[in-house]
Amino acid sequence: MSKMTPFLREVAEDLVSRFGDELKHCAIVFNNKRPAAYLQKHLADIYGKPFWSPAFFTIQEFFSRSTTLQIADAYSQFFTLYQVFNDLLKK
Image (cartoon, rainbow, N blue to C red; front, side):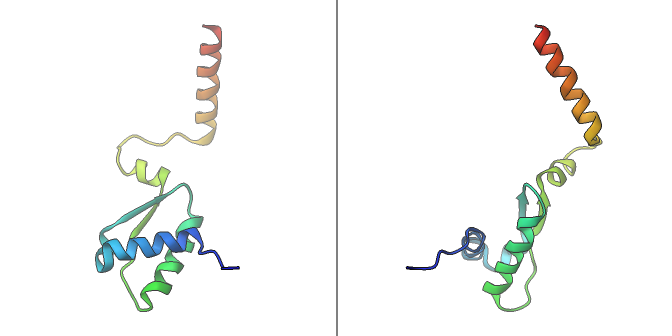
């Protein structure tokens, strides 16, 4: 029985094959911070030497950098969504 390659290892291999030493110019976007640590470890294993890492962002960080608007806190988001839901329910 063969050992399966972890998905993020495959992603790292693909990134290295596509971008090589130009990976430092890339931005990688994940849904949270945890996968970035694993991908970074796989990249380090593949390169086997010091390298310039790509930029890692969560989706929230990525979108927040593309606007001057302030991100609403969790309570504001919840109550806004609740209000919209009730408005739609009335219709």
